Length: 350
Image 1 (cartoon, rainbow, N blue to C red):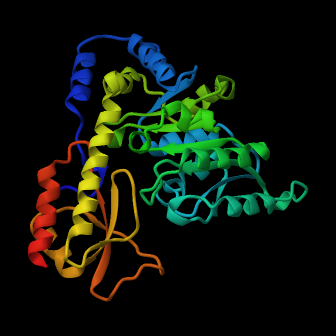
Image 2 (cartoon, rainbow, N blue to C red; image 1 turned 180 degrees about the horizontal axis):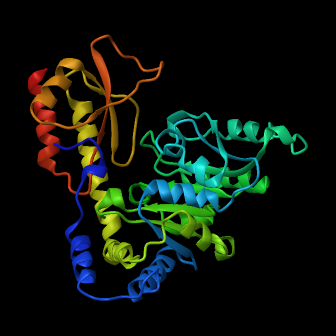
Image 3 (cartoon, rainbow, N blue to C red; image 1 turned 90 degrees about the vertical axis):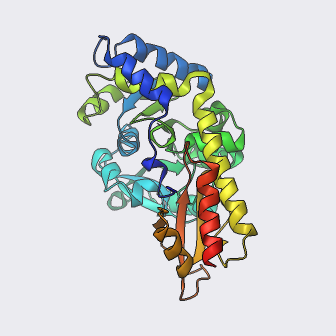
């Protein structure tokens, strides 16, 4: 009953087999192997256009270096209050992009468009002391377990582009969003106005495989130097590429995400149907569930071996003194039995 994070999950057998195959052969270094080239072409097919692809080892590196590509003196990156780049990346985006993060509020993890416009309007190009906006970043899925609809992405992109700014998408759980929305990768990115995507695979069945995708190769003209300077040009890049080759083949990445989404749906439905006092904190999509649960039930679940994290509740959360908010995350290899066991234990404790 592992619901702590999809980062806890293992690697899918197809990914492990691809790594094992690649381990037995030689290949050109620094991104020049045959498998590197095949995966780059596969990304172009998936996104229905030419893309510039750079492999990295972590999502933090993907976000930080993608934003560094648009660095400006006195640069400011606008993102949601709870964005991963602000809360969970130890200042890496500020460090690599030599910028500061300015946050924008919004319900359910999504930036409020009017608030974003107001934040951008607050910058006076003639006021050197205030710095200058350099990029807007959104997360898909968000840190609240919700998604931006395609029209919402397009609206943010239009606002950013109207100010001459690129739009970055943190896609650590991009597959979960694509599977749930039934949207094509192209429609959810460049057709909606996204300029650069951090494409995550580690959470969804890979060992460590992340990619930075530029949808206009001209905007990546000098990114190879950022990639190298950031310590992410692996000499044996083909081992990241091999993971992607297995992950993307025959739509495996979407099937794995759809499964983890379905397991979260099973968990959401079970909590809503229970008479235990446990309840959903807010509606979520994808593979994250936020719930308010009586402390006695949490203790019973953990005593039985369930793993999950307590989650900070904001002032709007309606918690009693004996309740706690928790986050439950399902993975590509979560089973019906794991979900049902957790629900059964909570029900019995109640």
